[in-house]
Amino acid sequence: MRIIVIDDEKIKRTTMTDVLNKSGYNVESFESSVAAITHFEKFGADIVITDIRMPDLDGFEVLQKIKHVNPDTAVIMITGYGTIESAVEAMKLGAFDYLTKPFSSDQLLLVVKKACRFLELEIENINLKEKLSDIYSFHNIVGKSKVMRQLYGKLETISKIDMSVLIEGESGTGKEIVANAIHYNSLRKNKPFIKLSCAILNESLLESELFGHVKGAFTGAIKDKKGRFELADGGTLFLDDVDDIRPSVQVKLLRVLQEKEFEKVGGSFPIKVDVRLISATKVNLLEKVKKHEFREDLYYRLNVVPINLPPLRERKEDIVLLLNHFAKKIGKENLKFSNDALEAFVNYDWPGNVRQLENILYRIVAFSNSDIITKNMIPLEISQIHHGGLPINFNGVEKIQFDKIVEEIESAAINWAYIKAGGNQSKAAELLGIKRTTFRDKMIKYNIN
Ligand SMILES: Nc1ncnc2c1ncn2[C@@H]1O[C@H](COP(=O)(O)OP(=O)(O)OP(=O)(O)O)[C@@H](O)[C@H]1O
Ligand SMILES: [Mg+2]
Picture 1 (spheres, rainbow, N blue to C red):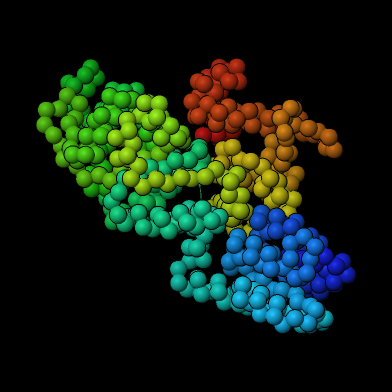
Picture 2: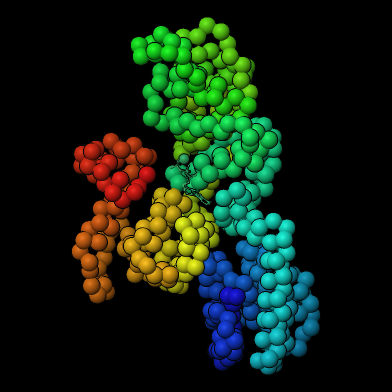
């Protein structure tokens, strides 16, 4: 159990911390309630023990903020000054219990134990209902931030109704995993789930991929081919990077959505299909509509239900949960993180979002046998926050492994260019002033994609 103690009086704070530490709890103590809240927002805690009278934020404000971030946290208030009213008020606001000053170590331990038992019961309860992960996850999507929890509810609903969904989000924010979740939670789950990225394909290739072609429709069409719409019949079609679809194909796509039929390239009769469409984009599609680069009527057909996946830097409270999730995914259930390592992970801005976090963790694990990840195992590009200027600063570093550093910088640069170029390798290579083939080799070397 992880406990946060907040009290501006030093003696009381250290006494409580010592008592709890000796009983085996993992305790962080704070003199300032503002600092405590910041810490809580980043790392969470199971139990928060807070004094009521404090100079910056008082105990009630602390209680409200904690409950706002995570309603499941047990908050224990320390009331003094002989007022039962404040204790009652605290309970009304959702405090778990209160301690009246002066109190003994035993009284403190008793209340904390009670809170632990309560939390454990609650967890067991949830386990019985489904899996613990269910409140913080939905079909492999993990996250406990408010936006993510709201998303689970929304996904539950829209999975069951056959509407077109448009998922917007930066690279690596989980668009594909959301599309998967919608399909496999829908009534169509036993029917095909077909994917197609519209990014790389030129106009005529895309058209034939979507709708298929008949033998002889163009040079190279040596036999009839089914398109993705036909393959997805009865199921779901996931169109990635829809913003890249050229106007001529946009018209055809609109027709399938409206009339539920289309013709193969070179074909002469319409084919009827029943397909649910989920599309995804890394750009703001409405902006493209305003610039007349994307058909407005098609936009509204695709975007019946919008889903916006915020970048990871805007939901940092998900980071620790995601790290644990990915550790489990590779069979490292017991992997632990030191506090400074977690801090480094949380402080970094993650331009490549969840995918980058996942890759970095796998890289760290691949390079070490340890069950504890400490800050010095994290690549410098992540653990050193830099504000422009030289990307890496060696001040205070004791020893440098030259090869490793060079690899880290190289991989960071490759990653940066790849993201900046929106996944376009030629453009990325150009940004770095290297050959496309060199860029590709490095991408493979550093497992970036
Ligand atoms: N909330 C999440 N919980 C668990 N895993 C996640 C989450 N979001 C993303 N991932 C993982 O991160 C990786 C990238 O996710 P995904 O492919 O869905 O992103 P994307 O938005 O489609 O990226 P791109 O725009 O580059 O195609 C995947 O391995 C996915 O499983
Ligand atoms: Mg994707």
